[in-house]
Length: 278
Image 1 (cartoon, rainbow, N blue to C red):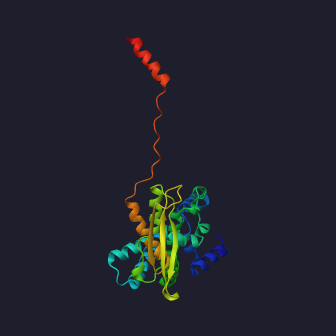
Image 2: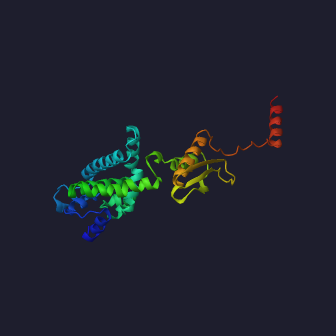
Image 3: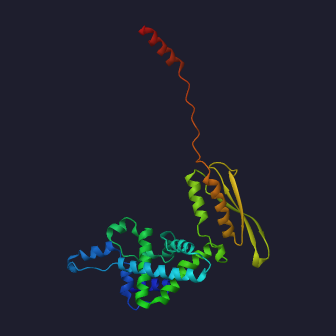
């Protein structure tokens, strides 16, 4: 990999590697390492790959995230902190940070992984992200990697959720859950409509409706209304209320097809056959 390519990634993560081979290893998938090791010129020597760095990075990420949540939300119980940490370090969330870094373009993959679309596979991207965190920790200690995790993993998610304070933090993404539930039950994608915005600029209250429709119908089947200090927070609460409705809702089934009446000619012929057997 060319040094200028690594330089652009270093700028993105906010760390200049004193040992650039650590970053190269963090970006090397096992498929690429095994291909290199199998070449005659390598003499069967082992080629380093990112699995060990991924292991270390996962631990570093967990520690930084746990410490930040402990400091930010002192009123939370252990179960709440654990649930929130699990969300922040989940593949579903970390893939956003990996994509923001355009990490797929930096991966070193074997031919098979390349052909199968490995540069876009969430599991490979998140593994590489954790490996980069491990490499950053080994190369420069705790400060740079902590700054990256806060700026690129923790803060964006708290902002996305519209958090004003700890009490307003949704531990569940109700909007995503509602969309999945609606799809499973044969409904259209939920609509969110801002109904009202009131209060002074520094202390506004937003009212949002979540509207559930059956596919092909314009009139909502159900409307949930909720208020919040931000539009995102109001949308999350409206989605939570709509989920309660869908929890008891039945799937939309296809209209039943009435059986066709018997053909009179067939019935007549059947009657004749019965007569002929007597």
